[in-house]
Image (cartoon, rainbow, N blue to C red; front, side, top):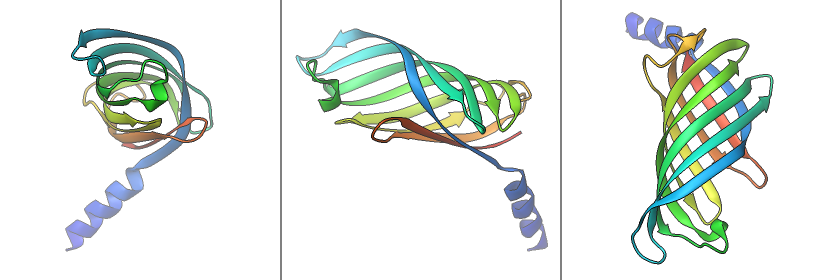
Amino acid sequence: MWVDYLVHRFFKENTMKAHGSFTPTKWDENTVNQISPVKKITKASVLLDFGNDKEISGNASVEWLMFYKHADEKDQHNSSATFVGLMRFEGKLNGNSGSFVMEDRGTFDNGALKASLTILSGSGTGEFETITGTAKYASSSSRVDFEMEYEL
């Protein structure tokens, strides 16, 4: 019981949190496979700007593969898709600098974006050499809110 307490306390104290938001600055999406008039698989290469927030600042490049179960070409906000990808973040978290890669899985459904990410072990550079953790993001009315829990 004492060991469990110490382990829980140690990990709880070493887990850091960072909150921020990002904006896409480049979006290059191409159809890989047109399944039907409304179903398709696409690949998107995207650049994200996390701005210069106190907790999170920097940029990310991401490669997404997306399956649209309903693609509305006239209004993308009416589309519904599932995506998987790899995101490389480069910047600062709570004053520490470096880069790392995250596996990204999520959904886009009628304008609502929601995703979960896992930092890939061994992908860190700089002060993130040993980083581990998770992240998530979701869209709000005007931006994409991003939050992380991680250990260095």
